[in-house]
Structure formats: C-alpha cells, structure tokens
Image (cartoon, rainbow, N blue to C red; front, top):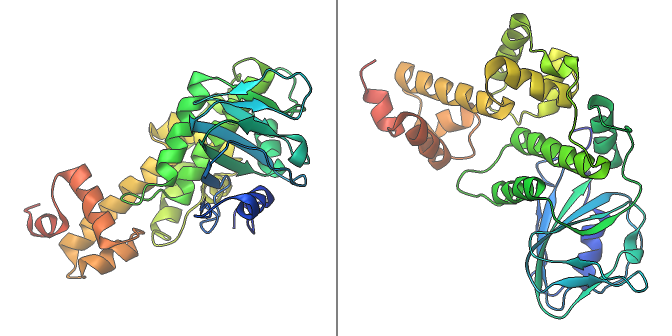
Length: 302
C-alpha cells in the first residue's frame, strides 16, 4: 500500500453513489492503490446534491455536457464548461454546489493531504503554500491535457496502466495544481536538476529484476535511491532519458524475450513472471516494441 493511497472508497464517491442513478460510478485505481483514484459519472441534471464535507481533495474535470453554474455563493457568475477544472477542498462538502440545466459528464480525481504535503516539500514555488481556496471552472490548457491523458490511461483495458505509471502521472497533476495556485511555473532546484549516480541506477535495476512479477510503485523505486518520489522521478529521467515506468516496461520486455529464447516456458507463464496482466497484454507490447509476436521471437535467430 502506498503512503498516499486510499484504504477505502473516497467519501466523496460514496456520497455520489447515494444520489446518482444507475449505473453506479466505478472507482479506477482504488484496488491497485493508486495515489489518485478517479471516478467518471454522468449527472442527468448537472450537479445539485448536498452532502457532508469530505476529508480529502477533489479535482473535478468537466468532460462534456451542459455548462453548470456555481450555486453555493450569492450572485456568483462562475461557470464550469467542457474542459474546465474545479477544486474542492477537504471539509467543503455541501458548501461546494453547482447546478446545470442538462446532462453533464464529470471525472472526479481524489487525493489525500499527504500527497500534497509531499509535493510541497520537494518543489520550489513562490510561497510554498497549499491551496487555501477552492476554485470553479478554471481553464488551463496544459493541465487539461495532463488530466485527459490520466483519464484515458485509467480506463485503458487493452494496455492497463501500472500503479507506478499512474502515481507518476499523479505527480504531474499535483504539480499542475501548485502551478495554478501559485500563478507561476514551478522552479527546479539544483537537487532536482542533478541526475542519479551509476550505482543508484544499477541498484534500482537489480531491485526491478528481482520483483518483475509484483506491482512496483514509484515510492518503492524512490526509497531504493534514497529520494522522495518527486525528486526521484526527475533525477531518474535526467539520468536515463526515460520515465521510471518506461524503464520498467523495457526491462520487462527484455526479460520476456530472454525467457522466450532460453526456456520452453509457456508464453502465458512468461507473461506472469515478468509482470504482465495477461498473455495478450505481453503479446501486444512485444509487437509494439519488436514488431513480432512471442512465437516468432522465440524462433527468431539471434
């Protein structure tokens, strides 16, 4: 279990399950202990339900549908439209209310205070402060693109994301929040710009090779190197030219090819041994990387 993962359904999602129509919204990433699980749901008449405050943050992305107006503040003219982003602070609950005249599709992304605290400790921003006010209907093209990518990966069943990948993407979304809150770009410090030492990369590689059939989190890799996840992700890419997730995928594929050529192990068993969810998942990734399916890679000259 990651340090910032939810151990049970986020309170905000439970509230929506009480008021929504079928089908009930699915929580992506809760079972895999993502740092930022996400729910997509469709509201027939926009928002409008009141419920008690929740103990976590809620990022709401307006996917499509009718514009909605903020309704919990007198004379408010704030509107949320397709592509806009809203932030609900812990404890705000029913005081954060909006109304729409038609159907709206939303995504709610949940994260804990601990994840935000970790980010604030490892990035340099103007005031080093966390968000003190919610916002509604904000438009930020860069952040919007990152959120859309997160949502697409979350629901990808053909090539399911790893917990490592989604935690790294959660970091990007938190950085977007801090940038918006501060009104300035994040400033890299010298320690972020420096890379990893060769022995640190080697140690990480050996760790990954010994646990390929397990769920590997960004926190796990960062602890091996002795850095926070935020420092580690940047230092790792500066050193290897790859994200931690891309590096892990390359090792898994390389090890799969090694087992194909050096053993008679069934392909389904190889997929399990190197950490893929199924034989078809391994086959698809091998085709993407090498242009050949497992059977041909096994028989190819090398």
